Image (tube, rainbow, N blue to C red; front, side, top):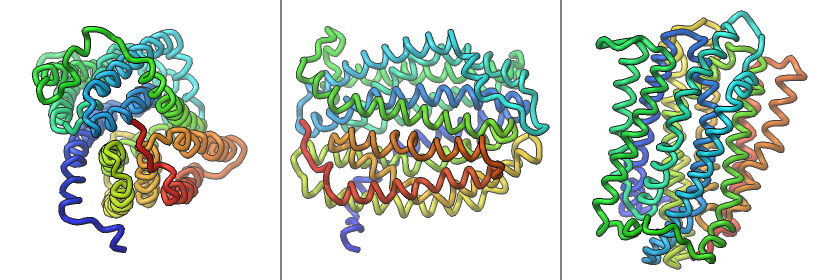
Length: 457
């Protein structure tokens, strides 16, 4: 038991890294929740159209995270070993990779966005107007595309700063951005202070504006603090990256990028499977995901802390210390998630009542939230195990552990249950979430075996 409980100093260190990330992500998701509620006050069709587009945007966002994370593993270890030039090369690689992904996404969404939205629209029940939902979704997507590049650039800067131990500035820039988003959402969605009431298009404009604000703040701050962050000195004088570094990043990062792309695509596919049961299910899952995202910041932020702390220890060659601290971090993540799950379960019947939607949607949302709350400790363990494996460069293992699992287990299960059985949607949703238990078992074995304990750089 003592192996799972750390000292006061240990928890101070964990919270010093975790709390700024948690605050930033928490505020971001809280404001996203307010945005969602504001759009939900306009109507079910508007809310569902935005939810579908955000599911597509989620795939792009996760691909960006995957693109920066591969180089970020090396960046954290370079920083741990005092190699500023290595951090600089990792930064350049992230930037070039994100630019390529943005170009691809713009072409895809501009040319085939409508077709992608259509895949989520199916008859089923009496809730919602499919054609109206489609139009709202297309209008929202057209504007959101403008925000892809600033979002990607922010991840490059914020990720590198965090890898070098700077968590406060990304948090401050993120808070400023979400405040801008919240204020302009209120003004543009409902037409306040003389502005026209733009509905979902107003929500998209506010989001894009907030991303540019965040980018400007974080870029200006980073380039004004070159002494504190030497990696940024001369980073744009050339885009030279040593061949050996590129090779190392590709070996480590390519499985990670593919994993994130397949995993997020898998999540979008699962959402599409749920959507065949009608717009009421789409709206209910959207409400449930909105509140779940606010609570999920706990295990997601702790996972990021695992990646940073364990990555730096491995980079410094402190392998035994890394193993010891990883056990404590995983235990801490599970306990925190148990507490969060209890709170989430208690508010489950209350949150859906905020939305101006049908009673069927509220009922489904409540049950989805309760299921997510009960599974929260499972999410905490699997996320911490995932970041543990990733910190040691075992990205091929994480690929099998994460996205391959989704495509070989979760998707076939949901696909068959939604299309070929009459099982109600709530038990189907429960069955999908409980597959996380199998991932826990796999993650436990991999972490226990210590396959991740290695110095990569």
